[in-house]
Length: 492
Image: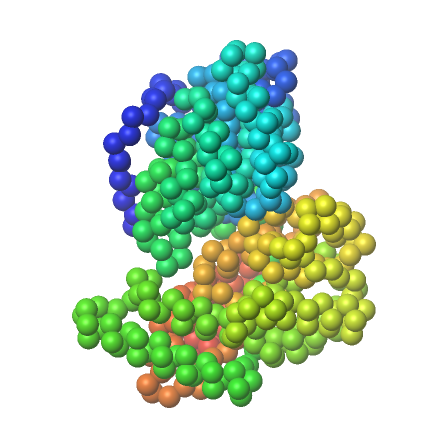
């Protein structure tokens, strides 16, 4: 549990009322808004959990973190808050901070539905700095009512953007999208302290192996607000679709097994040393373990036999479309070249060997190319996309019907993001299908089996939870049963 501190700050305070009071009077929607000023789309009907989340944020005096499942409508909820603030206190600036460029353009599309005309502040200073300074000046002089700015994390920390922040008025709302990223020290220090209205959005706000960063995030934005909206909630309420879940169990090669065993022994020795030194143990707060656990995750993620399993799976599914292939973002030697090795191998198996129409989707894919690929994928011209991490957070491609997840990560955020990405509703999608490649640890000796048991416990718990929510829960659980028996984890 993370307790939110309350650092003393000289910030403006606003008398916020509970939202939606005007709805009963029939005046919640502004009939003819000024260009660029927030307005709820007349056709939009907020879901009950979205309304509850908005009410919680106002009750908490304009601070808080919305922990809502991927695909459950965090963006719309946040923009509805901006509309309500505009009605209540004449909000003047909406500042949205995103981790990636493609999320800036995605937010821009949503903002336009709310009558906003956003400045997209990223990449070249010349493309946005003059526009931003002019609009902030117009706002202060009274010739403009509202300014919307959408920027990236990397632009936020730059001198060009920081020099403008001091001119933002008191009536500014900052929204941190995929806000867990903002807990990193350099980013957290760059967040504007003069802005008092703060909203964080994330399905997984807790930072992996970083309790301090998690605490800093909650100190700035405010605590997680009720109701939390889980994957189970999202499926039950129709915000996400039902799904079939098929674990695909993969063995390590002999060379990989030897490397795996060595890593497990080193992890065990590190934990044993910590026990003797401090009288306590644990993975999350042990700095020495992080590089070892990352090596383990890379080894599992790039396991060679996943390619054989992929070929066996897809040779009978050549006619399927709207399929996403998630690849590992690294291997035992974590250079840039090795991080693309599995991606290239997967693209070759699918595109060359099996004649499947695919394209790769990586951090190097330009925004323009991404839009083209998205349209080709949605239309069915492309049967599949082969991706690394850049499709993990926030990318909205609801047409995805099937996912084949080759990479394995110890980070629960990646697990949650990747599976939630596939469950977004789409008119042509009744149900999603997920094939999840799970690496079986090699046979271990008495020295290492307890270490492996502890490492596996959290990972297996996530697989079991996800299996339990699937329409084929019984079948999916049976696949995992042997693994649970082998390590005495039947209680999960």
